[in-house]
Length: 437
Image (tube, rainbow, N blue to C red; front, side, top):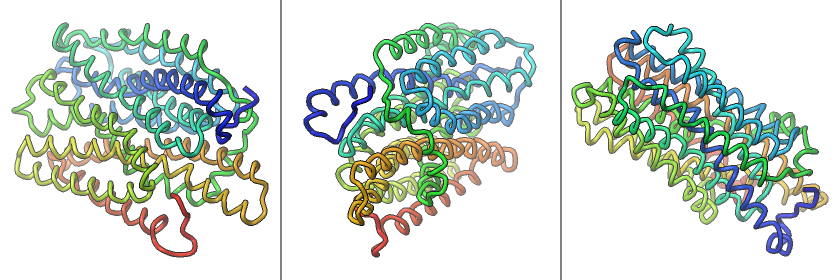
């Protein structure tokens, strides 16, 4: 589509809202399945019993690798939207999900080498790239006043892929048993095909986005890029890292309560489910109160959640432990929404300043949209590395002390740092403060 003017109220009412909503629906579907494939190994490790010969540290590595590859791929996936078009890339990236699902369905059986499992788990990282391209694409479809809600729905619907695959894993464990891990990835093959077909038939390419290929270079010189990336490490890094590791943490730290994979899988999905459902509300709260203010409050709540988990770990209290972790999932979801609302608001504020200094309003708006889409991709990539750090922190903590206390202390310090950074850059009074962030 060559004519796309979402900030024009008449255009939005007559054409824009309908087209944007249609693209959002199919974007959510494809991204949802991408998240499921990305987090597939958070469930598959629960199937890997003694006959596979893998210790807990080895299982944490199996979940860390796809997290790492997904983080790396988010940068090229963001650029791909501008180069190939949102619809075209959504179709291709959806079909690419067939590779890790088919491979997992082939190799998962006792006797397979650990190196093979590491390679196949790593390939599942392609599902993590879908988020960046999807968010950059949807950001271009919506006007500024609706970005928080739209990006929250898009990301929240995608994030629901984490509890969805965990619930399916629970279903397979409860019916077929832990001896049939291949069933789980094979379930996704027809779903991937349907997502690709729907995207091909119902999504659109925006010409204005396709013609803009310099945004990534521009955004790397922008200081706010790295501030927002750190903030997103604290929120999304926590969400995806905990989502991948929670089942294993329960099995290792509370062995007597989770002697079977089914027992762990019965709780694993709860936190990611709630964290995904509240993400749109994080965006809507940010639309109303401002993204920086909501993010600051949220980091305080996440710090309290980390303190709760640490206290529960030291007391050996499973109910308090689960309560604290669920709170961390919920507040990480809210923070995901509020931080992503901050991104377009930062460049919108810069655009207003530029217009006041004499810049062309249309060009300032285009630059704002271009930079916001690029930063969404960069922050998504850096933030996803937070998930790698979470899994590595758990691995080292359990290797060194046989509990997760050191990891919980590291999480607490991270949330305190992010709270201070949010206040110092976006809320501290002064003439350089950006209005509306």
